[in-house]
Image (tube, rainbow, N blue to C red; front, top):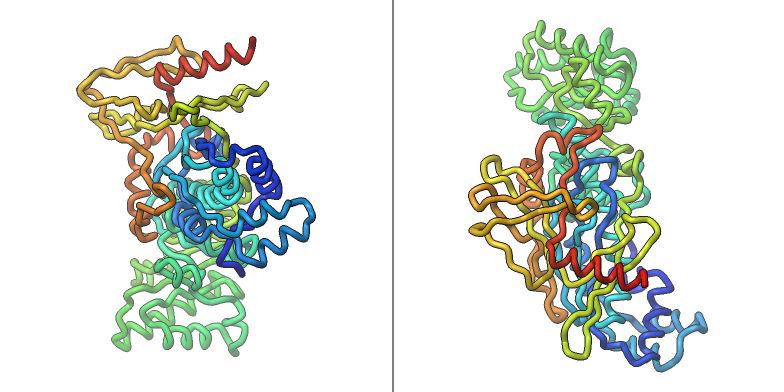
Length: 483
């Protein structure tokens, strides 16, 4: 929040490793690191990529200021020649990424960094911090919006976020994931997204009575008049007073363009059905019924199943903190090192946990869609120099169980490469869309998922496959390591 230059937003071991590379004379060796995740967050069937614009801003401003050098020197672990090198440090590598708002799946690279090893190592922590946070909140939001089945979701979480930055960039990610607005005014200013809100119970309590409070609010905001009705008694006081104010507005010739009520407590299913009948009987069938109060995708889904007549939802704590799944789990792993001949040598990380074994090499991703439906069939990770086309059959197999195979005919699928160039030789070559445009793109991306993949509980798995060449390299490296 307080620093424009985030170069020291890193773990100490990134800098100690940098000095090690510097001392060992391999500082300019080009390497490839992949940022990916292993398990879908929230037990979801997918995730949403977000945070690329902030990654770009971080890389573009990557430099060590004099005060940074002085601080590092005060730690008494860095030598003078290394600190002197840092004075002119800048990022000179290339970065590829999946665009923000794209549906993503486990084990496929979200961000690929190709750079001298010192540079690639330094940026690890910040990349993970930025992409992990925003991707988590965007994914949580997409699930909440899915549960609402077309109703508007407003992000109301700033006061419960883990600090200002989480509130600001969480709101940005929530807009990408599908929210129609945020209560966060600074986020609205920074990202040019709609800001929305009503009033608090304190507004009602500061007036002599509820009706007077409602009337004063309606006089101020006749075209955005959403009244909070549960300060005293929702059905006996709040809604009757709201109906009285709306009736007076209509009789005075004031257009009722955006009006209704918000409930923040009680049995929302029961109350909303009662409120809907009261509004209909009073001649206000288009009055909005909105609700807040510790909502998440599961509670919204339950309320919809109970026949709740709520049409607008304010979601705060559980969305902005992703309370039930507080971390995205992205990792950043070395995938290849350039040899003396200029070719990349694949590298692999082993583990006793199968899911932690990495995919080696310089890779790219094809997304395969079923031609008839336009839905995602699978993702295919392959080597950078491999080319797959829609006029040739494509064979897919499960890397964990390679005997499970399927061959798609040219008439059955379409292809799309997912990763785009963001930096080339230290220069940004990509202009991020506006947040609201990313939101629209994300909505189209979500439409490419099967309903079975989007369901909240026990979703269908989308397969992420390896090309035969990449699979053979991986198995060869595993065999070599086991010997």
